[in-house]
Image 1 (cartoon, rainbow, N blue to C red):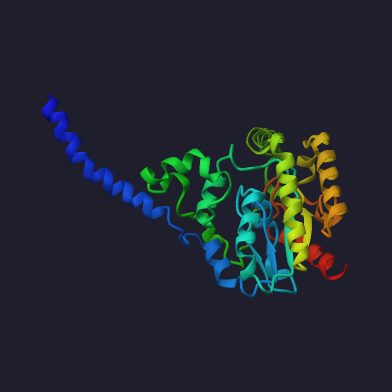
Image 2: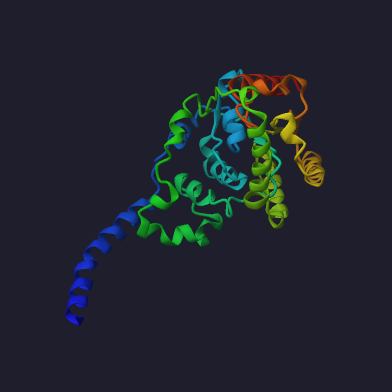
Amino acid sequence: MKKLILKIGKLSVIPLLVLLLMGLSQEQDRVVNLKRQLFEQYKGSTQCLIVGTSHALMGLNPTVFPFKALNIAEEAKPIEVDIEIIEKNINQLPQLKYVIIPIDYFTFYFTGLQEGSAPKYYHHWGLKDGFIRSYYFKRYHALTCGFMINEHDTYDQYDTIMGYRAQYEDLSKISMSWRLNKYRSKYKDWNKYWIDTTSTERNYKRIANFISMLQKRNIQTILVTLPVCTQFYTYYDPKFNSRNNQLTGNLLHSTNARYINLQNNPLLTADSLYRDIDHLNYKGATIATKIISDFITNP
């Protein structure tokens, strides 16, 4: 029996070494997703970068702006990751004039650690700093060959309009019972996975220092609160709304950032402008982007 175990052990060494080498090769910095491909292709001529989560990914159409804009927002992407992307590439963004940063309900509290999105983005964008070093996915990445952190994102194939993902669903055609369930589940998920109040100070300082860095390079930061549907907004905790307003106000006071809040804009209240309870569809995105474009070009 012992001889059999030893024989099996010896035979398994080679497959394990192959898996390890495959995993280590995946650790190398390679451009594997469309979003980064677009960024690498256009960063030399881009004048405006749009960052953020799926709200910006589906809610801001770069082609509506009168200048060359690129949307690098991605689903469940923490602001920390976007900041590191731009900091790493700042010297390769010679035409950059504007950075649009969405201020969502969760922006100041979201790290991606509990939700699990941060490791994937740190890897996809070739970022070696930050909390990814100690995150458990990183430790096992070599033995899983990258599959556990979604090496190849199948959804980004739709982000072809300068990084924008157009949506054609219509919330007004969805039943009220579905919406009510979605209101509760979305709010519950945000509180469970996206809201980490212990990260508030860290995130705030990171954003403030980033804006100051851009300011020194004569790059204007535009802070934007994109809307969610009117009924879902009533589920927001007033305390968080107040805290978000305070933190945003502090940023405006200490930097040259400008801010526009589209939550209660009368042009964006109709349910027909949303794909679901918290994402604009292509009609809503066109309106929102046009409003922001006018805000930027007509200070």
